[in-house]
Length: 309
Image (cartoon, rainbow, N blue to C red; front, side, top):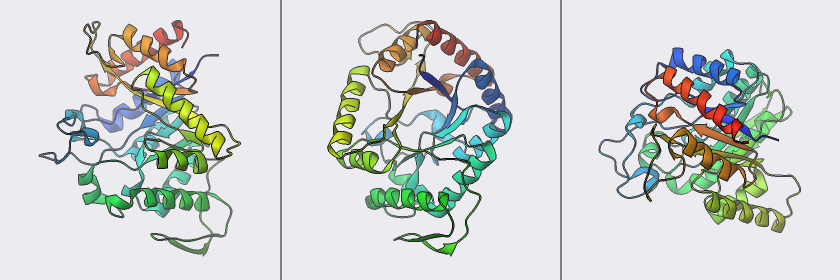
């Protein structure tokens, strides 16, 4: 059985959000993509006080100078599609008031007929935390824990009640409710994050940095799940950030998912073999406009299916 494939929606500065998001969403669903995804970046520090992903000296991509709000983008896609799941990869949880985010996700799920997948993370940018976080960077893990608790409460039966460090909900009716179970997916980049994922989330959302590395992470996740007595299977959606160069990329410094469509598909096949359920393919960064993005997405999808992915 072929693995599920998803596509990132156009959020970056080269796109006309109101026009291009519905257009790309419709085209992706017609092509066969089973899910549509958004990410979150709220600002572009100038000059940057941190490297990208907190790696010293690594520059932020120019496309990050303008990134559309993730939930607004998903709402545009929801109205243009009927079947594709609508996911976040990821929302930076501590940049959101927990109660408000829980209600927004529930409303989007109800409006879309139960298609939302909530990928949540803690982020890494100190500048984003300074601008928008509900608590200091040092408390990011606690904020994520509380946000998960608040979501479970708000999405559950009425009356809803909660008493936490950031959130107090008096016994209340809170609606609309999600159409059905709304899954929460988390990355797992540390032992503590791995335990949180196993104990509290529905699934795992890694980033594709090489099939061998992914296999090691997957093995460790399964070991921790067994150690902690988890009975439910762990859902998995792999995010791959591509660098499409047109012609094949030659040289020993080639990164995973860099190069021609054939090279990208070869990497997709290697990562799919690890056993993840779904792969989210981000092609938007190096496309000039929505027309090029749609053409590239269709080409990658066809080539991946032809290769058995």
